[in-house]
Image 1 (cartoon, one colour):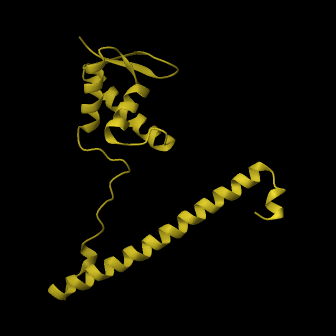
Image 2 (cartoon, rainbow, N blue to C red; image 1 turned 90 degrees about the vertical axis):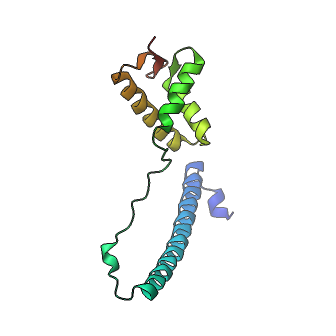
Image 3 (spheres, rainbow, N blue to C red; image 1 turned 60 degrees about the horizontal axis):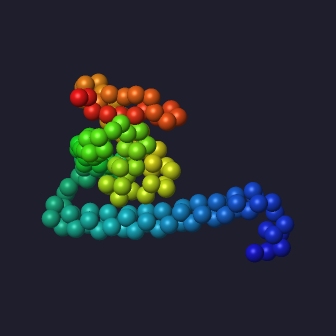
Length: 149
């Protein structure tokens, strides 16, 4: 660490570290992009060995799945099983913790936790509209969920 960074306030030091982190991510992504473009060129060259006059513009990219995509019905299964086994109302956060644990996602990752909490909330609301779950006020602005008797 140089003498100038020692004299900086802690906020500036933290921002410098954040900048270094983001610059490192950008360099890594550029490396990955270069390798992927090379791989794509190799696949296209191999394809042209078998079909020399192929027009590859007809074959656009396949959509990338959203981050932390679950299998169809996976969140529903985890949510309903967790509520049934608990035998008591569970908050949206309790259900989020269960879904993340079952799927092996780190609960301390705030961004991932927010995404999963939104998905759990949407799942619960969907089953509420179908008459399977009922909600009651829970801690903070969260709801408690339970299965209708």
